[in-house]
Image 1 (cartoon, protein in one colour):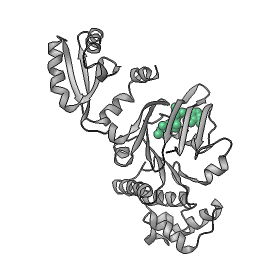
Image 2 (tube, helix red, strand yellow; image 1 turned 180 degrees about the vertical axis):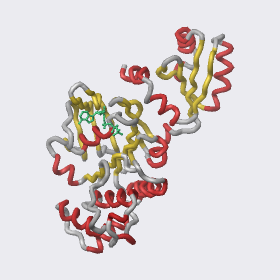
Image 3 (cartoon, rainbow, N blue to C red; image 1 turned 90 degrees about the horizontal axis):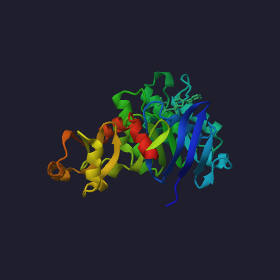
Image 4 (cartoon, rainbow, N blue to C red; image 1 turned 135 degrees about the horizontal axis):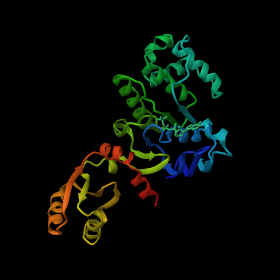
Length: 312
Ligand SMILES: Nc1ncnc2c1ncn2[C@@H]1O[C@H](COP(=O)(O)OP(=O)(O)OP(=O)(O)O)[C@@H](O)[C@H]1O
């Protein structure tokens, strides 16, 4: 399966700020690819580079197996995006807005009924003749997505699409993203600073912090509830790590965080591990299993040690 997006060693520096730092990732056809990081992590800058809105300092972006720098027009013709709040005309109706953007997009001319179908995709068919100024933020967001879809792109890129929406608006956008992927076969890249959001929609995800990749993988593996991270603090961590490295648990060791040793294991193995720590006479100060990736994500994105460990 050839990737839809292949990013290799991408970096962006704004003077002395390193917004994106040697980032590589791939998005496959049909993915809902969650792009996760806290505020300022570099998500928007990366997305802007994918859309040719910002020029990379270094690195390579291939989309649909073409180099973005040499095939910008061909690529962007097959991509749709909503970044920040969608720019819609509030004194025009939803239908007039989509008509206007359809003309601007330069794609095939769509009939009124086709445009209404596009509004139906985002659940706005009943409000086609309402002026956008009467819309909730969530409805405007969905209209923005309808506009991004008007030229029938294969790839949709959404930067924080649920930001500022109420719970109903969030659920509507989430369901829409799932439909775009499952029913219309689109590849969707969606950024968020909330793992809980991404967790519900993405089949693959990338977590970045300070412009660097922390984790990339299949959601089913990363969200596996049976997989647990055990955080361990001992009287002498260095010695404990040496002992663990010489034990059958060595393959479970993860990059250490501040004062803790981290091991990844199946939930069912925790009692045995606990017992063996005692048998190895490791003086444990604290022992904390963490079952949720969310917790791990919060730790990861605040831990410089982990970033350094991964980079090395
Ligand atoms: N045009 C710019 N000039 C200077 N610095 C910039 C510019 N754009 C982004 N940055 C910096 O790059 C870093 C990454 O910003 P970016 O907006 O990509 O992060 P983000 O993950 O999208 O965060 P948010 O969710 O808050 O938008 C930040 O430190 C930001 O201040």
